[in-house]
Image 1 (cartoon, rainbow, N blue to C red):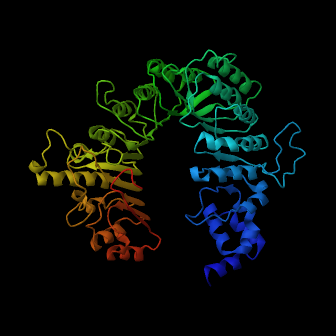
Image 2 (cartoon, rainbow, N blue to C red):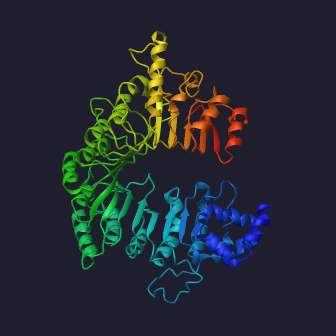
Image 3 (cartoon, helix red, strand yellow):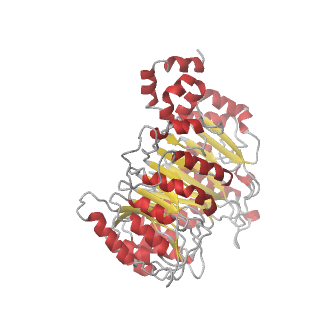
Length: 581
């Protein structure tokens, strides 16, 4: 029986088809729709419960979610995610128009006269991110209409344009009494003097009784005597919101997760300070954006120590500015026990007169007994000795991920540092490291390195990894910056049995994913893949990245595929330039 005929047989009984559909993922639903037209007609409402037109489900094949199907299934939609590119701007306007089909723009008459069986009034999650302010304006009236008629939304992500039309979106947001998560952002090119836009937004959202996650990817400018006339200060807005939220409402919750807006020098951090000392927040997670002032860092450290006693998760969304670094360090010093630290882009723990390399060391010194996750994406500068301090002192660590910015990032961890002391992070589940075998410095001379000593350092390094018996994902990359004297070919033998240290990894019985973002595999052979098959029983994914041909045609990899037909094996041809795609 072919898969297509099997699908027709299974889904011939409507009751059975509906029961099975309740346990399928959106990807599975899409695949079933492609092979069985009868199933598509029966289960179309289930397929449309999550509407994501700009992210085709199941890969590059277009989703069976069509425009005609959208109109038919408006009442069944619970989740909408619109992430259009610049080429989809016109289409996104059309989609928003269809979602708002049949809904009146005015809500004075209420929703009682509307037909819930034909309209989009049952949304729970709505995310809309557009490319620019110009792309947003045509869709804004339809967005406001949708918000006015979907009072049970719990998660919302929308852009703000700082235009006069935003007064309508502010009012619509203020009616979402069940909203738990709100993320707003604006075009990065828009700057606005004065507090009016952010003040109007805060007056709309802060009183919402169930709001616990608030991301404000906005810009707060300095004072503006003209634009700020009639606008109360932040303290007054927050005080009024606190009264409105908790007055007579014992079930109202506090804000647990917060992203501060960006601010200028003159803006300083008055909003951050006002929120932190208020009764509106009981933070567990804090995200720090780009800040241009560090004048409040010491004061905020004290505020965090006294008011944010439950803060466990710290994220940096941008890490170029000195003010951001000072504020993040203040948070680290003020917290009583961080569990995770994440830098999303451009982490640079610089060693200079303005910002000593103390951030990672602050983390280790103050939170080594509680830290479980450290994630540093697209690093510009991390010191090898500091990463070694993490590995040798943070006993509860479950995830360490250090990704170097391609060609310019200096985040390589040196073998000599890694072999000095034993690692204590035996709880690690995810480990991603960038390696620098031969660092480039005044005291480094590749020609004078003792090959025996270097081999011993390599053996110690891979042996340390091999002791991580709970490790589920291992990712290795190499330093490609000017700080290294190592060529990519110098690592080619590392993960072999004959001339490398693959044998040191025999104890990784829990390993599921192996990601090699440099040439650690071109010298592998039959004995090496047999070792992987025998010693890593749970391995289900291998990802190779480099400037080589597709390795899947090699005989030893073909043997592994035969032994593990469900193994996910991917190869990626890496560009020689960080700007090429």
